[in-house]
Structures are given as C-alpha cells and as structure tokens.
Length: 333
Image (cartoon, rainbow, N blue to C red; front, side, top):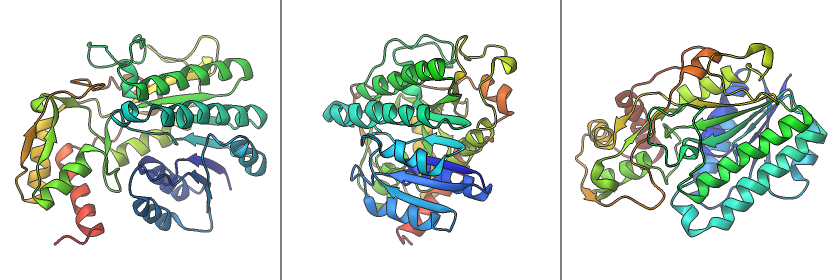
C-alpha cells in the first residue's frame, strides 16, 4: 500500500484530502497540532470520521524540531501533502509570531525531513493572497508576487521560495498550490460561509466588508481535492513542461492556481446562503479590513493543461451542500 503524509490532517482541507487518499487506497499518516485557533471539537469530529486501519493520527506541531524527520524516517511516505499552517489574514495582524513559527519554521522542518528521506512528490499549500497588490485579473502563476498585503501572505510566499531552493539543491519534486477561497462541508468556522450561516440561523448581523463590493473565486472543496489528486500525478519535470508553465528552469518545482476561475460578488454569495437557509441575513456594512483585497480570481489554464478541467460546482449548489451539512452537524431543524 502506498503511503501519504498529510500535515494539517484535522483541518478543513486536510480532512478532505485525507479522505480522498484513503478512498484511493493510500495508507495515510495524518499530523495535526489540534490548536485552539477554532473549535477543537470540530477537528476531533473530522478525525473520528477518518478513523480506519489505514489512517494513523499523530498529534504534534510541524515546527517541533525533528518531529517530521522522525515521521519521514519511520514511514517513508511516497506522497506528502503539506497543509498545516496558521491560517487567516486578519489573525496574522494580531498574532504574527504564530505565522512565523507554524508557516515558515514548520515548512523548514518539512523540507529538512524530505531532504533526508525524499518522497516521490511533495504538494505544499500556498495561497492566492501571495498575489498581493496585483490588480490585473485573473491571477496567473507567472505574475510577479512581490507586494504581499498581510503577514500571512508574506509567510506563504516565503515558503514558496524556501521550497524552490530545496527543489533546486536536492532535486525534491515540489508542486505549490495557490488556493482560492475554499468552502464546503466541514469548513472552518472563521471563514465567511461558516460565520454567515451561523449568524443567519441565530438571527444576528453579519459583517459585510467593503460594503459588499468584494469578489472572490469561491472554490468548492470536492473540486479542489479532485484537482489536488490529479496534480499529485503530475510531477514537475522539464520534459513535461506546458505552455505558460510556472515550472522552474533550475528545479523540479512549479506553482499552480487551484480555483474555480470565476469571480463571485460577495452579495451574491450571501444571497445563496439566504436561499439555502430560507432566511434573510441582517447585514452590517463595514469598510475594508487591513490586509484584505477587493477581488481575487484564478487563471486555471495551467491546472487544466496539467490535469484536465477541474470539477466546477456552482456556488448555489456548493452553498446548499454546506448548509445541509451545517444543519445536520449542529442539529438545526
């Protein structure tokens, strides 16, 4: 049985990726710190859902010296999916050291572990926030990314550079993913869909930043995971370069957008929540938050060239599936 190491396995995306790998016949070693950044009971419920003979959970922080090296030595994973990180643009303003340690030091520990015991392919999560102050849309992987707008984005962009250096120096095949606003069942409570749905059901106001003049490339979780699964088989190799590829000229390294490729107005997203819940949202209109950008969406042509067209769940369907999960999980009539 092939082995995969998934960091952040109790997180939103890590849970769904682990579930897919188990379904595809992998043995999965899942690492997670179970931090209290949000409700730990939700993380535990995800782990309970993953429980099987093929899933081994390890509790620990990726930044802990030599923890990852020990896991690599013990399990010799064929595939590594690195999703552990301190997430959230706004929280990075309040607690930047958490981002330095989890995102930068944690990724360093991962790269050092891989250098000693190289896997066949490493998939590392970055973010669309890396595009920073760019105003040209849609975002393409070959755009300059020099002006990050938050410390969160800066740490994730740093991990891209770190990974490239290790790919060059040690021949580690690495694909970086820039995720675009992922949503769906089992989602994170600090993200808009979860917060808005909770507020609508409790009849409390939702904070609508920039007075609703925001566009995001809302990407449904199953579509994202399907993209990750297919890209896991597309190992960076100069012999398989694509047109407009982000493949490095000096390393088996590339960065790939993972998004739906269609911008959605925030107000339309809220209306989808209202339709799915059958309730109207109370809206508290607010100015733009520091570190935020008014719009993001992905050019997905490289993704499609490497792995074929992504699944493309429309927002109304995806939001309805989340609301159905939310009702069931929290026992809402």
